[in-house]
Each structure stands twice: as C-alpha cells, then as structure tokens.
Length: 285
Ligand SMILES: NC(=O)c1ccc[n+]([C@@H]2O[C@H](COP(=O)([O-])OP(=O)(O)OC[C@H]3O[C@@H](n4cnc5c(N)ncnc54)[C@H](OP(=O)(O)O)[C@@H]3O)[C@@H](O)[C@H]2O)c1
Image (tube, rainbow, N blue to C red):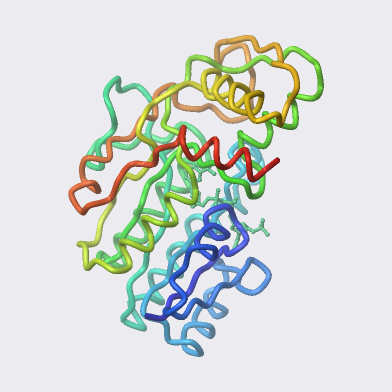
C-alpha cells in the first residue's frame, strides 16, 4: 500500500510516521515540501508518486489566530482540503481527512452525532466545516474523521502548555465549563492505519477519547500524573473559572462531546486518554 501523508510534522503526522507499517510505503511531506493550498503542487506530487491513499493531517489549527488570519485559515482549511479532493478524484485514490468538534456550537447536552446540525461559532470551526463540505461535494468517497482536544508528546498542545506553566509558581486559572473528550494523537494515528486496511464507506466519522471532561479537570489529571511521575515536584495552584472570565479571541463551544457510536461498529476503540496521558507525560519528561 502506498500512502501520501500531508502535514507530516504536525501532532498526528508525527504519530502516524511512528506507527506506520514498515511493509507499506509512506511518502510523508511537511508544509515546506507541500503546501496543500497550491493545487499545481498537489497535482505534481500525486502524478509523481501515484499513491493509493492521501492522509491529510495538514491544517491551519491556531484557533484564536484564525480570527485575525481569516484568509490564511480559509486557504489551508477550505481551498487546501478541496485541492486534495479534486486530486483524489483525478487520480482515483481515497482521501482520509481530519476535522474537528469545533464545527458544533455546543448547545446540545448529549454527545454529538455525525448527523447533527453543525453551526461553528469561530473562524477556525467555520473553515473546517467548509473544508468538510468542499471535500464531500467533490469526492463523496472521502473519509472525514472529526476528532477533539488532541494531545501528544509533539508540538504545542494543552498537556505541554500545562507542564510548562506548572513551574511558574503562579496560580493558574483554567476553564471549567467547557466539556469535551481529550484524544491521544497516537490513538488517532492507529485508527487511521486501521481504516486504511478497511474498505469503509465515505462520509463523516467521529473519533475521540472515551470520557468527557473539562479543561480544569484535564489539567488536574495532568498535574496528578506529573507529580506521581516526578515530572513536577509541587502541585500547582489551579483555579476553576468560567469561559466568560477567561477572554480568548475565538469563542469556543461549551459542549463539544462527540459520540463515536458510528466508528466503533468497525472494530475501532475509543482513545483511553487517561492511560495514554500517563505514557505521554513520561515521554515528555
Ligand atoms: N489539535 C487539536 O486539538 C485538534 C482538535 C480537533 C481536530 N484537529 C484536527 O486534526 C488535524 C491534525 O491536527 P494537529 O494537532 O496534528 O495539527 P498541527 O500539530 O497543528 O499540525 C498541522 C500541520 O499542518 C501544517 N500545515 C499548515 N498549513 C499547511 C499547508 N498550507 N500545507 C501543508 N501543511 C500545512 C503545519 O505546518 P507548519 O506548522 O509548518 O505550518 C503542521 O505541521 C487537523 O485537521 C486539525 O484541524 C485538531
């Protein structure tokens, strides 16, 4: 099997490179090697390598910056996604693409299904939703996996931010009224590899952690584990606060818990995020 991986230096990209089966051929390209918003660059690469799959982990992911860099976020998340779908049609290959829980507005109070109405409340979420639509209109055989609250030992993410701020000795104010499911990027990578082996229908699937939490409780879990492992020597002072008192450029859904009922029918297991968090923190140490 020959697979083209875009965004190979992102969190999911790096996790995928680590676990990719050695008997398959992986062509992993980072942002410098392939800008997905440039159609002719996408087309050139595909005609050169002729892969059977594209796994797109490239995206504009800076949720707050997207409010000011709207054009850049659009070019990557909408045009870039569409370019990959056009090319996957042209070369008769299958596209696996990633999307987000932030396509929802957070007004529901039970886990979001793939069929639930989307209503993004920030620019990032809107560009990711428009990217989903552009892909599905162009290539209905594409598989879109929505995920949430990714963490890993790579790049910037909530776990690494918390561990860095633990040493500052300042009291940390953490939002306690947004609910979501953390997901270990390595588990998502394993799920992508499993899906590459299965011939599942095109469309949207949710994949994420097994238990919902809040950012405050997630932080507490991180510090409990880090203290036990000796990564930190003292429990930082953390204060639960409301979203309205935190003040970020982008609004965030208060509830973005995803249901994974659809994908687990294919033998996929939810990410056991608490178990993976302990392993991830030991790797960061
Ligand atoms: N992180 C989360 O919590 C989260 C939650 C839900 C869904 N998701 C989705 O999951 C996917 C993977 O997220 P992630 O956390 O692995 O992202 P990430 O760590 O931010 O990686 C994204 C990668 O895409 C690259 N990139 C940006 N613009 C590009 C372009 N025009 N062409 C090619 N590559 C480009 C970036 O390179 P540079 O850094 O060099 O620009 C980066 O290496 C994304 O689709 C994201 O929307 C993420």
